Length: 181
Image 1 (spheres, rainbow, N blue to C red):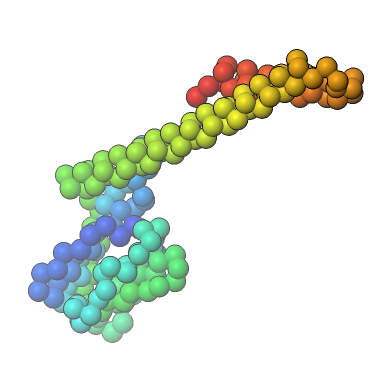
Image 2: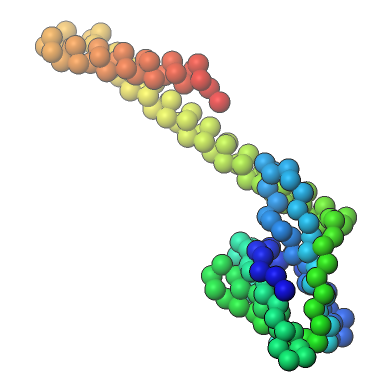
């Protein structure tokens, strides 16, 4: 039937019937395009208890779905990006495209909130590293300034080198102050 990439979301089992829910893409806070929810309804599945649903799209990075008809049965096959496959044999496969349900929207909101929190944590760590770097550069500048002011015995070459280094450090620290995050 189709060969498309989806993200596995959920399953519902009722007797030997199975409904698998997939999202077309991973929700991302910078992507405002709506993606449909794709549901596959599999009727009268064989060996439904042997299916390991935890390993369908284990890394949540997408999988390819292939549906083929063999004699009077259908073979529903998922292949994740690592090449791991899951095969379900059933009597019928129906593909439905739906809009997000309330539970899908809650899931998307939670995913976007998690992404926001992760980015907030990353930016805080970056700010802390920048503050530590500025502190280190300021300490280095203070040390060089003290050497220039207190060491009268420095040669002119050494004094010029330290003054050049001092000026460079001042410029870098000024950039921190002017371009602060």
